[in-house]
Image 1 (spheres, rainbow, N blue to C red):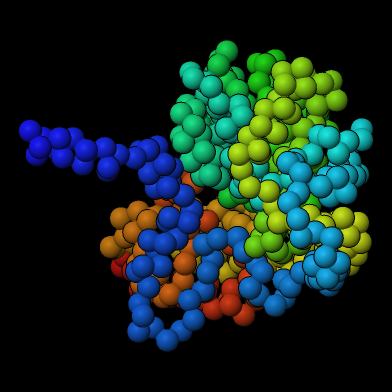
Image 2 (image 1 turned 90 degrees about the vertical axis):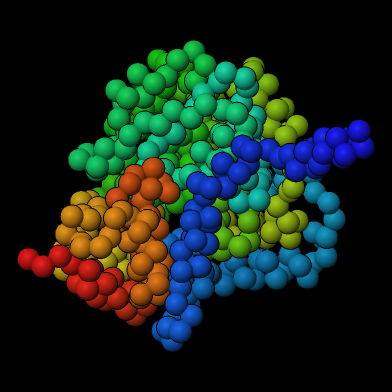
Length: 422
């Protein structure tokens, strides 16, 4: 009897939430860990990271001195060493509201702003708040897999709609209409696009907003790459259409200011008609944040100066660097026969390129390509299967130009070496 009891207890000791395991398996971080495990430690060349969007290690993308000074002053002031209110301190929330209101036809209030530990936490918060048994959410494919992971962890059914490569990665509106039902809580719109680098036009976003209104679903607008555009389409925030449909705007200072490690993001309600307030969504967000972590108090203390005082020349310089790197990336890819860039990115810091494995003699798919590339050339790029699109590849061009050129030369050498005889 004792052994039976011990066996039963042992089973309890090893139980866990399998949903968390599933969400980890589809993460970008998990995929990059796998790729890094295949690096050849004997290769003396530096590993070139083209697999994730973090330009901060490269000197050319150093953040503005305004941000440095603002953070330093916040620390030295000793005014931001204590606990902070749920949702953030008022001056920081007010500065985010004013920053976002510059591009909107109405003015946001601080009460509509909730500060988070980066945009990732903003995703976690809104997915958790909207989840209920039997509900579903519409997520783009390809897309940012953190949405899938959070939805899975919250038992929220995931319904993927396609982004159309033949239409510069526009949203398949017909698919959205077919997938939606009375239990659909929201549609996720990522603009500027990760991973595709698309920047949606005003007309396309208007169509999305009108479709969401007709279907009775809310919009989660992921704008973490807001204003990082360098093509013909300007950045239009989804909040412009807040009078048409309620919008949750997610963003951060991570990308535009090149400080992802500072972990300051926001979840903002853009809903001038007040539908979300009637549904008590703001109070639910506060309740969730009461059980979660706040962004560091000193970052909150620094953010008003960062948002208000950063000179336009800093942003122009970043855009110029990204445009130059993108041009180089696009030209070099033309010389590599097994990969194709269908659409040159208009924003964000990524390109999605199509992989033709039929031209390679010993590469089975995109994951196999990336593993062998890491092992043979010490270059890390992200397989598209992680983002929901098999036999595609995502490359970031937000690194210094010499490293980018070196990486592309190594990729070409790898493809030439594995090419089938013509």
